[in-house]
Amino acid sequence: MIRAINVQKSFGQLQVLKGIDVEIARGEVMAVIGPSGSGKSTFLRCINFLEEYDQGEIWLGDQLVGYRKRANGTLVKDRADRVTAVRARMGMVFQGFNLFPHMSVLDNVIEGPTVVQRRPRDEAIAEARALLERVGLRHKIDAYPETLSGGQQQRAAIARALAMKPEVMLFDEPTSALDPELVGEVLDVIKSLAADGMTMVIVTHEMGFAREVADRVMMMDDGNLVEIDRPSTMFSNPSHPRTAEFLRRVL
Ligand code: ADP
Ligand code: MG
Image (cartoon, rainbow, N blue to C red; front, side, top):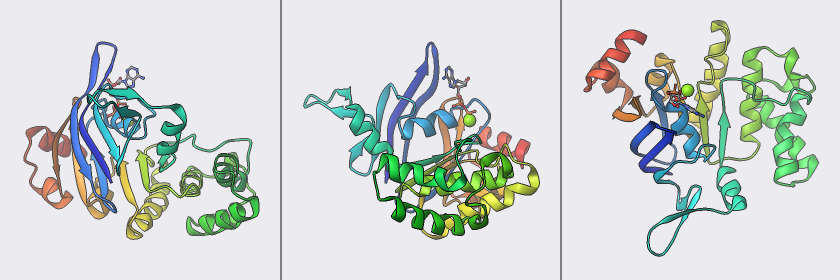
């Protein structure tokens, strides 16, 4: 579903991705772990081209993300509408501040389907109801974001992303801004997506969650993917010293 080949990215002189190679299968749940500043968010943002990678290729299915290939193999930046189209196949949820504050939960969820996808409003509303039911927020459909707890806001943000019918969901530390007692309700929603076979890439510090839900875990350090394995293997018997050191600190 997602294939990254030698993905490199610099901010000025600072190279933050030093050649990431990974394949994520359809229906796979990939957790991304690693120290702060190791390039996790940048890699996630490169996948949906919120950040332009400088070198390498990222494929979503048979579509090259952000670029198109000339006959001689060089890459040129793709047309904006095509970048938007490929990005629309992926939903993204950040740490927080995902919702439009001046819109009700319902309006947040139907914004993409009605404005971007130009689908009929009543159809979008019916789907939004079902999605909000699914994330346990049916009773908050007319509420405004500021009246919701952080956990409720993140669940609404997940519903909003799902309303676009993405093939892939990308999560960047979706629970790290939450009070501890609200973490579980958000992770439970993500777990239910995993059970439904959604392809997901999840940057997380929740090692228990990664162990339980992820099919594989990729450990990033200083712009490199240093180790990738099943969580049971990586957490009990890390093969790279940087992974062992990182896990000692967080577990
Ligand atoms: P992580 O998510 O693993 O904490 P990031 O991908 O956010 O790491 O950041 C990796 C490195 O890139 C850090 O050194 C960070 O300061 C730097 N960085 C991230 N975004 C930018 C940016 N827009 N401009 C300059 N440097 C950035
Ligand atoms: Mg980050």
